[in-house]
Image 1 (cartoon, rainbow, N blue to C red):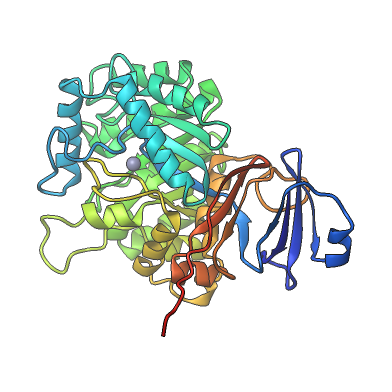
Image 2: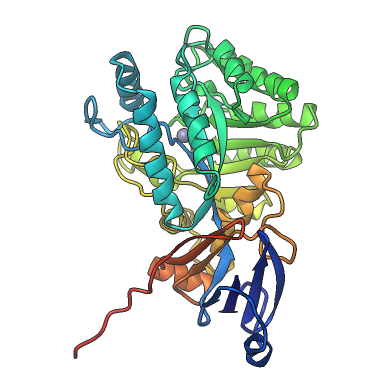
Length: 416
Ligand SMILES: [Zn+2]
């Protein structure tokens, strides 16, 4: 396949991109004469549009997707009512493997239709039968031709707050989960929370996997498990292998504590998955006005050199009733809430949903360079700024050299 007349970052002129046997075979300046005299199979003319690597969703819950309203709506809109509803759902046996599978595939398809090619999904393993894990392992296999999935063994109701929670996390790793998770701020005590973080790192070392922890997703400036994550990562020389999801409490930390914390997080090369839409919805409830933002200080993290990704988190579940997997929409919110609507950030805004999360997930051969895996999308816009401003749709998506979908540009025909 040949993609002609593409705008890509770092090239002033339009380029042609040849895809061969699942890889990018070459990228060079568009040359009509050379192209016309050669044979390339399918040719797609991007007509100057922006081509980027396929997007990476580094934090979502596919096993929860498309369940909002059943058994009941989240009336308070809080995270704690959502967890309660999810517990009821499990107790009422509403999560059959078939149900989870079909809803998860629909959610993945929605994200992929917006240009995603890689997903890290957390899967609730606080269930003695590990039903959701079994379903998601099947989904992973089934959709591998068009989307690559990583599964985090995630103890939604806690490693120690839930009976045998820590054992279930380990069992999930033995059964095929790719990454170890935890949720320290929901454990019975702060000490249990610290123990859960350490146990997650123990399991990571034992099974040779990465760590991704729902860390400090609470409106409590005393929730400081991110500091424990930094310390554990450095002590075990697991630099770059741990991901901090949410880090909501960080938006409440004092400048004095942040000044001490930032170098520790940097030394550990911690990654961050920040979910601005979802945490704007969930956080700050029950507090007096003005309401805090409840989103980690992304600008501070980025400016300090930390790796930050923006993520969807939920597609229509008890935590968040909206969401369709459109990561450009998430970047839009993230840059707004982070006070980052300046060229330094919006002209490279796709970093937050491409190269940054790709690093977090450890995706091999990611990007648009020659020899890389051919995972790319064509946006209906000419620049990253325009993609953001226009919420530009993806017109073509290619995964490992195969076309996933193509859609026409929806330009209006003006009558006046
Ligand atoms: Zn989450």
